[in-house]
Image 1 (tube, rainbow, N blue to C red):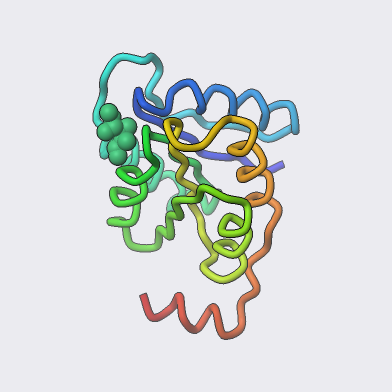
Image 2 (cartoon, rainbow, N blue to C red):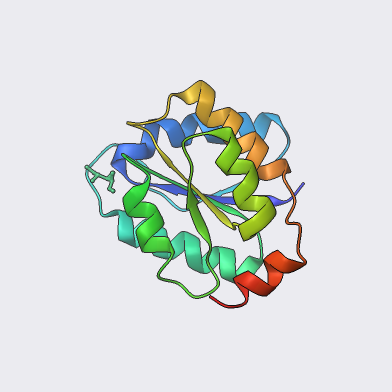
Length: 140
Ligand code: RB5
């Protein structure tokens, strides 16, 4: 099973722990880049750590904050990162198939944990289609 790189700020800490437990149960290795408590912290710091680890390892990453938006804006600053903020399973599937998304961003204050776990599962299972979509992501 591949290793998943995961991170959150305080706003995503609870959902992160739910996702970690779920992925461990499925047999994934997890690298947790923080934060490690609900104490207030800065999401761009965590986004940078996860983005760099995703780029270095070639593994996928998951970032969670209150809305999922700050994490996605921050992670997409790093060349080679295609971070997707998803609130439904359709976009989670399509962003893998068409955008070869390598980081999934979720908002703990937006998406309930049941739906969030479905989004995670579908995002991890869906494959990039390549072809015309590869040509397009190479234009980024
Ligand atoms: C923290 O309060 C909150 O701003 C953060 O988790 C995130 O939602 C930012 O986009």
